[in-house]
Image (cartoon, rainbow, N blue to C red; front, side, top):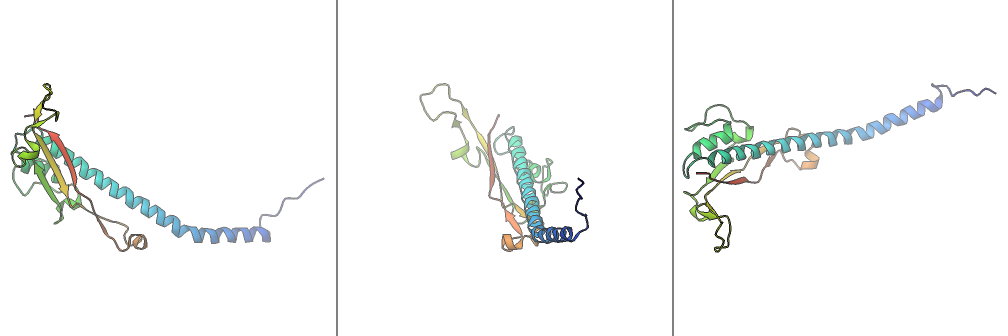
Length: 177
């Protein structure tokens, strides 16, 4: 006995194709919105990682300098990626938010913050004879504004937000000198 396969262009097939198109039309905006939100989040995360990396580079540079020296060079290293002995720093800024008016870099070391950065002991117990005394240096980047690239498309989710301002990013290291 021979069974016949349903014809590919029959009336049932057309209705199924139409249902698929309707489902696609309903889901496509949601999928696009999720894709844009994911890309936007990834870009913000990459910018945050870039700021953290630059703060780390500046703190590492200052950890090899004497207290009170190298502040301008470290700030230029943070914002422009190269050491410059005078402001304005040479070259272009590494990230667009480094040139924003609300962005600032602050540096604390044994000279300008002696209570928290000078002669810190590695142990709070005064009876520990093996404790070492060292100076610290801290670099803080505050007010970095990250512009949202797809804010127009995501306005319903973000409530009209077009810029995310990062909280202060700080790193403390010990000075080797």
